[in-house]
Amino acid sequence: MKTSLLLAAVAIATPLAMGSPALAQPSGQLETLPLGQYRCSVPGSAAGQAWVPVPGMDFVIGNASSYTAASGSGTYLATARTVTFTRGPMKGAKFARRMASILQKYGDDGQLSRVRCVREGPAR
Image (cartoon, rainbow, N blue to C red; front, side):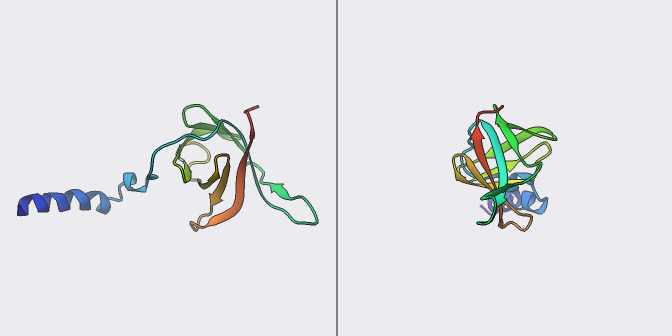
C-alpha cells in the first residue's frame, strides 16, 4: 500500500517539477472556430469610429484548426471558453470566446485586453 501511494505521488509530482507543458494546455472539449476572416479592433470613441482596427492582427481561420495571418500561418486550440494559438506568428496569443464568432484577447498580464476579433464572413 505504501509503495503504491509513493509511486502515485512521484507520478503526480514529476510533471509538476519539470514544468510539464501538458499542464498548460487548455482544459475542456476541443472545438474549432467558425471558418472565415476575423478583424481585430479596439473600442473607439463617440466622436470618431466606433471600433479602431489593430494593424497586423487580422487572421483567417481555415480547416483543421489552422489560421493564416499577414506574417504566416499556424494552428490553434479552441475550447468552449478559450482559444490559444499554438504555432505560427500568433503563437502564445490567448483569447476568451465571447460568442461563437467574437474573441477577446488576453494581455501579457493574463487580464482581458480591449482587443477583440470578430468574424466578418467567409475567407477572402
